[in-house]
Length: 341
Image 1 (cartoon, rainbow, N blue to C red):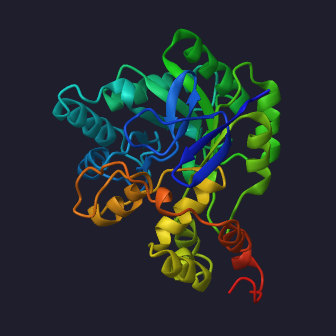
Image 2: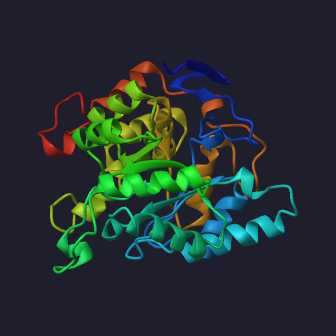
């Protein structure tokens, strides 16, 4: 059984499985994963977010850094240098134990021996002694990513066994998966000796991943959303006719933002958190990064570290407002209805 703990932020009450009150500065909550505080808001570093930008995110108050081995999209070395520089300049006020560092195992390394060896390489790339969380980035590889002639050493089940040994040794605190569907997740959950603690999947207002989220809720797994601000639709626009990022242009979201006096990203991030999904927004500009950090009071308007007044404490989305966004699920793949608009 997983105890439901209520945490109050101003007028907002989150009922999250295993959620505990934030003790790390002004972060808006999180949960204990493997005995360590896991922030519900972090910074994503996809599209090769650089050292300068990651360092700025840490200065703005983000305490979770999400990286990956896939050098097609990430740069672990840049993330590591930013972390080291921030810890040095903090003068001991922030330590490594205050940060949550995630990396994701490239699917080309599936196998009982290959998987842990790849994580050891990640730790070296990051310049750290250990990482807090390792996710299987994908359940399997495919030719466009790993090459036509690539042959896996093993399956994701084999990888999991190898990674469990790293947890046993204390080299990694927790394990999880990314881009797994509900069937794959349930199969791994039954197989695993050390259960997945975090699932990181694509979730935004138009793609809400209900089946996986329900499985996570039922089994005490933290659900973490990537591309929560609609970036995946931009990638799909290369082959499908979705046009500009629909999250930033949808009239229902624009009206909600205007009524709250918020930006659309703030509305979407608040909705995600109130729907029990952790978030890792990614931005390369200080202004947008600061806007994202305002969800947890991590950045004031002038770009300085915030005082702790969270966006949510100024007025949460109401049940009716949450339902407006809930109804957008699948809206880009079906005709619009009056309720969508």
